Length: 465
Image (cartoon, rainbow, N blue to C red):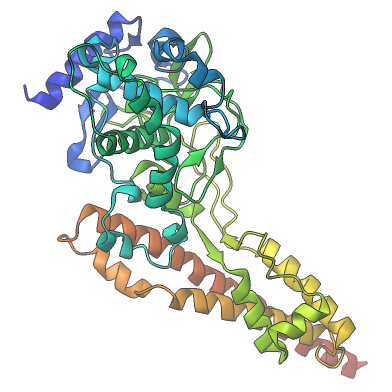
């Protein structure tokens, strides 16, 4: 038995000793490193629908209520950091859990969660840990501005690292060596990535979790209960899934389908996310998530395309009251109508590119203003539609041209067997975006052709009267 399997066995023994229930007659923990998935849970035999596969008592979960750290540092967890800055906010739920994870890690054998901590990853494939050369492969994608290692450093150095450095007697068992500030920062990054990838919202609320540009997911509600849930986080996840985590006195994982066969992997659901976001948060990519892919179109690009199509300048548009390029607004999002999984976790609806709702609505408003201020620019509805379609086509083509490779080149690269795992995932992200743009252009072309035919048919009908 190798070290990996031995650690798995120790964890399973510990899990049961903590009151965890695990249906060993139906499922097993399996080494999936050959698939780039670490551990996973596999069906040993056919599994019926609505069957409880395992259950986790809340006492086995790592959070601020079960760890001793919050009791030892009540001021840190209940109020803002002490200091001259009265405006400093209390640490939020994510920072709290990062501190708890650092504390339990540093306790070593004294932590009751040691067998669980031993199976958590120490290396991550999230872009936060990529080299500059690897990050270059994501150029042009929505991830370009969502990975901020420096901003993360600043946040951890101001919010998390000081707590550890100022309380060595609490974080380090007697006689153990202490880490330097840079080593604590490195550990904080590791635990931050662990929390982002594996933590559960224990209250199972539907509230949105906000994001900041530093690359971390941030919860602004400090009271939100997050925790690390042993066994549940061994489940891998996909957009098409067959199991669900139910929240009650215990956390129970139940099967959703009647046709889960021996050898099938038991898969959880993280939500409807584009491939780029799955890679950013969890460090992997699967084909099923591509239906949720999205592309960001800069507002400045839309303004420039509108100016070109109308023969006006950007300043002309601003003076008229066209406010598309508002710096307080997010970029326009291009995405498909994807539908939601059904009650069995199956993706049964076809994902289709059907419209550009927000972009077209704002473009329509802008063209109304232009027609009112400069009626000679937009003589009729047909001219308005022509300008709108011209603008949409231009911004889509410009976005396609912004990637360093073409879709055809990416498809060819994916056929190769000698590219690295991270390189392959980067290609999946950017190809997913390009495929969406190609579908958007095809939809726009079909719609433009249909509109042109309608304009041609109308005068013909009048002539026959």
